[in-house]
Image (tube, rainbow, N blue to C red; front, side):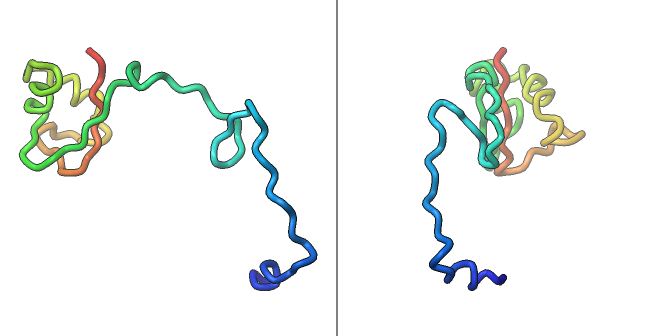
Length: 96
């Protein structure tokens, strides 16, 4: 049975069933996992041209010296060189 056979087969159309109320699921129908509120996870920040971790820390925390916390929370995104961040990267700004 091909795609066109499936789409043109009028006899086998079934109505879409509404999602069960109260049963939160993800896209694949798996039970949704509880997530922490955004405030507990920290905020996100998208790097723009001219940014550095110290500039982001100064603007977000009021102290440029807190760039280490941003780097530690984003090592997997930034890599081994904290001076090399790229425009468009989405960084997590942890709560301090």
